[in-house]
Length: 301
Ligand code: C5P
Image (cartoon, rainbow, N blue to C red; front, top):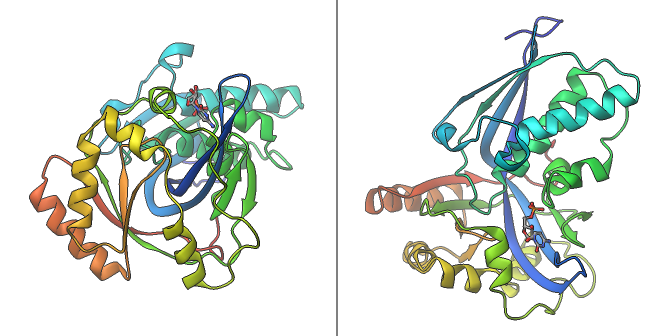
């Protein structure tokens, strides 16, 4: 694939990890108010964009078959929705949004609490804004209309997200982490997990100033929790098996991300994470298991 200047444009769609997620309330429209501390794995999907004679969408990667190919509203593909929305916006602003070949390398399991679809949508907005040379920031309401997690994926840096996930504060000085991500390849429906939640008015994660040192960030993560973990585990008890298996590897901390079912273990270095991942993959060959580092506040999005 080539662009007008001869190069395809590649954008990483990194896995989003909710290191902690507190549900702090509920809005009138049923959406939940959150306080979540999020970082991004270096592991994820990858999208490539190139100008073409007509719009095209192609797929590869381990989970390619799980991606809906149509862009009908109810069988939605967030990449195509993002492309269509940004094109509408670009044309309304007087820019030419030329046809594009988008290739998605799908490495993240779908509906798994690590933002695969949202990360893909955010990467599409970022890639097409560059391809179409749109000036300025992508409008926040446009990103939010694609899903509550799309604005945080667009930010792509360690952050706190509050509101329904769209009020973003960068987590300055946040350290690089070494994780193992495990998903039992059991899809959990986000609305069902929120629906099963018993306590909706919990305390925020951070009550005061942001930590300054790496060890203080780790202490904050350990002192927090994911309020969706218990309701998700009741709906999909295999999540208990995942957290038990991660705990048995000696991880410093084990927790579920988002509405599940992906859980992560935290390790002191990449070598320990890789050993744990190898052992888990051997013991549970049907699960998705990957060792990854996360980006730190200083890395480019
Ligand atoms: O916005 P998104 O499509 O990702 O949300 C999926 C569903 O998850 C929503 O329809 C809602 O039921 C639930 N949700 C919520 N509160 C949030 C985010 C999502 O209740 N902050």
